[in-house]
Amino acid sequence: MAKIIAGFASSHVPAIGAAIDNKQTHDPYWQRVFSGFEKAKKWIADVRPDVVIAVYNDHASAFSVELIPTFAIGCAAEFPPADEGWGPRPVPVVKGHPQLASHIATSAILDGFDLTIANKMEVDHGLTVPLNLAFGSPEAWPCPVIPIAVNVVQYPPPTGKRCFDLGRAIRKAVASYPEDLRIVVFGTGGMSHQISGPRAGLINSKFDKAFLDGLTKDPKKLAAMPHLEYMREAGAEGIELVMWHVMRGALDDKVKEVYRFYTVPASNTAVGNIILENVAKPAKKAAAKKSAPKKAKGLRKAA
Amino acid sequence: MAQAKSKQPEYEDIPGTFVFNAERSRQGYGINMFCMSLMKDENRKAFRANEAEYLKKFNLTPEQTDAVLKRDYNRMLELGGNIYFTAKLGATDGHSFRHLAAVMTNSTQEDYAAMMLGGGRSVEGNRSKSGKYDKPAKKATAKPKAKAKSAKTSKSPKKRK
Image (cartoon, each protein chain N blue to C red):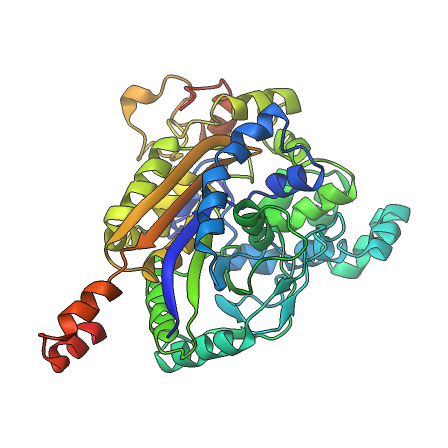
């Protein structure tokens, strides 16, 4: 059976992508940012997920104002990098996992989550920068990636609670997929930043750190935060952080925080990275199997 | 848009911020679709060749056309433009995002970059036009009632972490 083993969240600042593409990662300014991701890179190289489910937002690349899906799941075999005005980023084409993606879409829709299905979609820095931060700059991405695009461009984005519940629906879907796949869910965007209007440049480290704490320890309470609070406290574009709740909802209630990194700034943005692991239970389950009655276990699992 | 209307959403109380809601999206449809067209090189060339003529295809109001021609980025946002779209106009002009940020915050690129390196613009004094969410004790740098302007008055770099 497929299972979600961990969550990985990070900012997706376009300037980080530009620094990678222009080979400036060793400049002192960027060194501060990239050195913070070294542990994350090592972690994911050790974990070697079979599939990544990446929750991100499109920045007027695949979707303009003509069509604004609240949640869209990429079911295509591949997703080319978008031309964001400077030509497409020189990164590998993102290979999808159409079978698992369709399985998640089917399961989630029947579960009451009306996902939009994207069978052709280009992906922008919102998706490719976090892939770089996790995997570096390889010739090909090391595993298939299922993109899930969330509208955070036109107000209102989905609520934190709805995002968290989508994570739950994804988790349920994954658990019923027959192939043995180990999956890491990415939440991307944020942290505090505002890139529009006279208040541009806003950063709120206190808010960001509390958000990271809440994500690990009290995610349901955190997911109840109203949109107004993100926009007021973390900047108009800080509302991208709702996407981290999808990642968190896909994990167990109790998780182990294995890594955290935070720095200000990358360009206009506070950069955060957090890795949360599901605490492996299969061993315990196997041991309990001998004594515990089967139906009780089944019930617990369904809840 | 700064004036108090009866049933304004509470987010309109955030200073220096134009939340891209359905109303602005409708109003700014032409601006944003114009910006979207700039993702194609042939369109960028056509726009550069004759900006005013090119803009005619997008049914902009005279105010919107004026804001685009003058590269008044805040005015574009006020008239329904969205930053992810208007950033494409900046890219077409060969400008970095820092340039746009400096224009929008009425700052210089150097000052803006220094502010970011210093930890960014503080949220203190920048939560609300009405002062509702800002603690009185922390209004050292920005006048509470300064409306949108307050966002650009607190330019001085604050504490680093």
